[in-house]
Length: 523
Image (cartoon, rainbow, N blue to C red; front, side, top):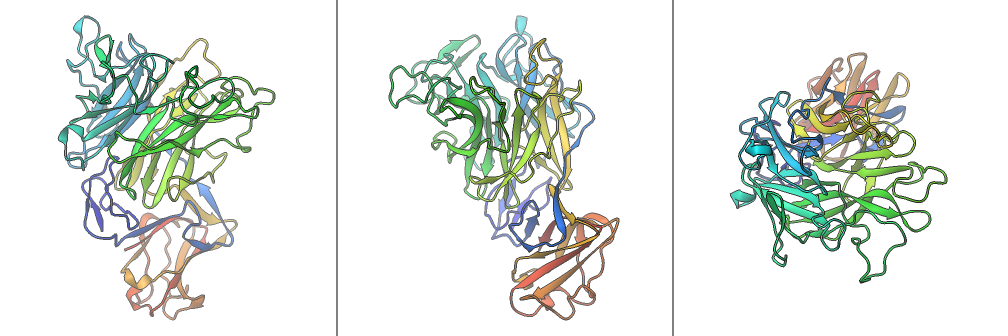
């Protein structure tokens, strides 16, 4: 079993022996005795006649929880968050762009995740030596604030890890790409310099290492270069670019970065943005990026607009995280020409490399289309905060759409969307009734079954089948009906428990009558 301290109770790992690092500290005991089945796909389902799957949208906080109100901040959007399970303290890192400097990383903290303070330090002063909440300065071509907390690292000075995009010499190869930094507390950061780097480049009040850990590509026009072309100034095809998001991959016990990349278009030249994945055990040596998600015929194009770098619908970024056996990607889908909007779509994967997009057209985090801070586009991240009864998604927002630069960005900020725990998608009847039959498994290994479901307008009954046959005492008629809304409905039969089942592999069947089923947990 994997147990979590503080915020999340038990951390359901689906059998994986691993640590969850995005805001939850876990301890490993033995193989997981708890299995939570999230109904975002049919991976655990045998069949489900008379039902449909419906994406659940996050509930947006009424206003931004962090706004740029310091002279050095400029525009803010990129962010990462961590909640200390021992103290309950929230820490948040966000990029401030402009405001008398480039892409600097600023810091905020909170006791409840709603009211934030910006502590000021002597680390990186502003004009005339004024204290700031800047914890890592950057240049004009410095992007991202991707931070992950790593309690496993034996070196306390590297418990906090940051991955970001830098272009210290602009577009001149081989400088652009992935850079990292380490910190003992999330405040005092040390940039990592490759041992083969030349002396660092002075940049105002900081020095920047010159060689990236992964040489990236900031977009190009024209055909792909020839390999080892001395005139080529771009990065490797399908490499990382200027949107970097990092998380921990518990099943594989490594770090994963999902980054923006560039793919070639209909004419064979650089055309659209997509998403690649690269992995590392030590946060320093990273694998060759491989394509994870790319726009397709369902995303569409802008007719006749094949040149340039902003044609049609693209995938601007795809931060991903692992939760209860599933990888979730908060995909930033941007329509550059027509609407200029960039809402967030929920994509899913069972291995972190092969992805599906079952919720096309239904936005997980929508834009508001108004004069709010998130009216134009959303910058998602890979660090949702798992509480006992809800998941919090902090995100960056811009008021101005991508295709409406003039007269420039107006409102920006960090927002918050919440989701009841594990309610990513619901299975509900097409009409009044429906049923979900799950794939066979030995249910006698468990003592209890709970449902995450809303039956406040109807009822749910659960029966158990043996190779498709009903089992006495575990029929629909024996089931005690569930008729309310709860994250943890206890399933019960009249005088029977799962321990009373006969030997074999059993199929759970959940009968829905004007009710919704989100997940089930066997313990």
